[in-house]
Structure formats: structure tokens, C-alpha cells
Image 1 (spheres, rainbow, N blue to C red):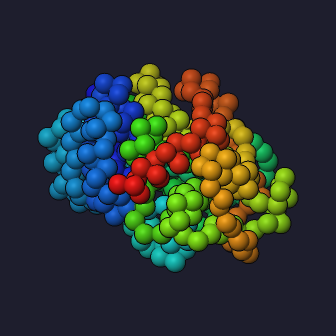
Image 2 (image 1 turned 90 degrees about the vertical axis):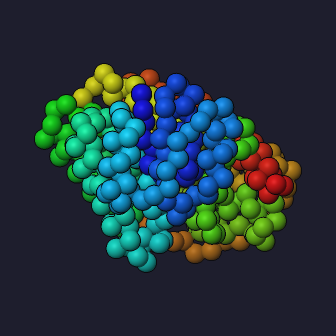
Image 3 (image 1 turned 90 degrees about the horizontal axis):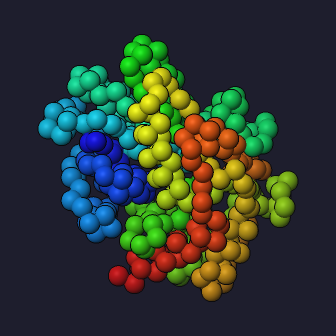
Length: 334
């Protein structure tokens, strides 16, 4: 099949592109490079030993997207193109609503025009807000607490309406927990433009000396060591989940919501200690006040993913840290 991967040079999109290509699909990547790097295109091709079509552009460019659907006979859309910084979304909500929501509308208009029926959406566990029970099941109420999360939930509601309007559509929204780690080749990983917003890429850059210490927000949570507990899932597991989602949609119509996580929680200090063991580096850190919206613990119920997608995570925290350390060393040595 021909799979359009929007945001396909970004962190998760690039790993998904590798996974789709390895399964024998033809991948067409569109990315505006706002939070990715052109070098990733060559690295994806090196990993897969396949030519990957790359088109530089924005999903809001209707003419560009129309030409992609026309020229490449798209069968499936895997939609990763979207801004993802919670703090930035609070500072600039217009940017997030315009790009994330309107970008999805733009893609769907072309899907309708060209009769494309299969859509995989990159959503987020942030739509749940403050967990009222753990593990978090897909039936947990949604109560997003920032513009980024609200943009994801709005898109989900739109996708549900689309599926109700056309019973031939096959749509899945994958709610990620905390993607971390890097490809086992050491060639691609999380490499944002500017200072990282997420824990793992910042921790890695402290380990190699790019930053003097790690900022840990909050030390008084009701957890094993006072630091926040999260469900850290290896990005390769996450990519495999997308491939499983496509295979599921080939047999099932309608709109589906499924968590992608490990079903286990680890604290910030547990992750840091494991990274120190793997890297052999002492990682300095300082505690800061909690940030608004941070919760004590969050981890997924993965029963539905196992039942419907026949998928489960296979990588441990140790595996995650090894892959990340292998990648960050290679990235900065070169």
C-alpha cells in the first residue's frame, strides 16, 4: 500500500516510516521541517535500504496535499504532523489550534476527494487530564487541561463525526503515553529544533555535557521517591503499534480509540538512575517547583491494544536507555 506519513521526518513519524517500509509498504513523507531535520530523510533510507519519497511542505497547503494524493495514489494516511509542546501551546494557543486542527481538516478534505478510507491519528494521553483511576483505560473521562491536549481531543471528536457520516471510513486514534528511546541502529532519535521540552532528550544532553544539569519539576509527589511517575514506551514499540493499527483497520470500519503504552509506571529518578547505569555517566540534577498540570502518576491500561491490535510493548526501561545513549553518542560524535 501507499502510505502518506505527515510529519514523517519527526521523532515518531520517522520511526513509523521505517516500520511501514520494512513491512513492504511504499512511504510518502511530507514534512515542513519546523521541528525536524532534513538529514533524517537520508537516515531513513539508510536504515531501510529503500528509496523514501520526501516532499517538503505543510499540510495546510491545500494545493500541495492535493498533488500528493493525485500523484501517489494514497491508500492510507498516518497523521503525525502537529505541534506538541504543552508549554508553547499555553503561550500561543492560536498556533496550536490553527496547525493541529486545520491541518487535519486539510488532509481529510483530500481524503474525501480521492476516496481514501484509512486514517491513523497521532493522539495523546494528555486528553485524559488528571487521572481519576489507574491504569488509565480508554473509557476514562477526558478533561484536557491545556491547548495542546484540547486540540487533540477536538480532532478525535471530528474523526468520530466523520466515521459516523460515512460507514466506509476506517479511523483509529492512538493515545500515546510517553514515547522515549531511539532506533536500534543509532541513526534516528528525538532531535528537536532548539531546547528539548521532553525529559529523555534533555537528560541525554546533560549526559553528553551539552547542558550542566537536569531540571526535575517536583519532588513531593505521592510516588515511590517523590518524583512524577509516567508510562515510558520505546518509540520502536510505538511504531509497531501503528503498523498493527493499519492491519486492524484493513479488517474493521468505524472509529476506534486505543492507548499505546507499557501498562507500567516509572519515576523520573528511576529513569535517571537506569540511564546512569547504562551510560556510565553521573547526571547532575536540581529540583524545581511543580509545573501546572503535572500529575503524580500516569500509566496506561493496555488491555484494548492487546485485544484489538494484537500488540504489546517489548522493550524495557533498560532497553530504552541503551538505545537512547547509543543514538545520542553517535549523533554528537558526528
